[in-house]
Image (cartoon, rainbow, N blue to C red; front, side, top):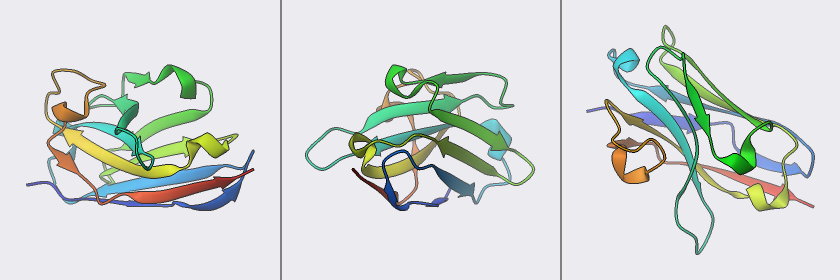
Length: 124
């Protein structure tokens, strides 16, 4: 069982930056692919970014490429999402997720473990 805890959300203005963090409870953190997703009210949970076990490879939703950066520190059991130039449409609850071997990197159903989420609100 893996427990994930996100932090770093908040209320910001358009153009601002936020850095989200997710700490995992498991000592086997390096054996998990980590992802970030978000869900806005009335919408499906959508993929944002994922990073492979040792951090060698990252994948992004096209619309956030160049603005969002995912990284991980296996020694600290932490994955982060740096978000720059935030827009009002980025407002959502942001979740980190873990999977030992996701069948589809961008599919939320491929991730077995989820955090409780952290709210990001971007005012125009």
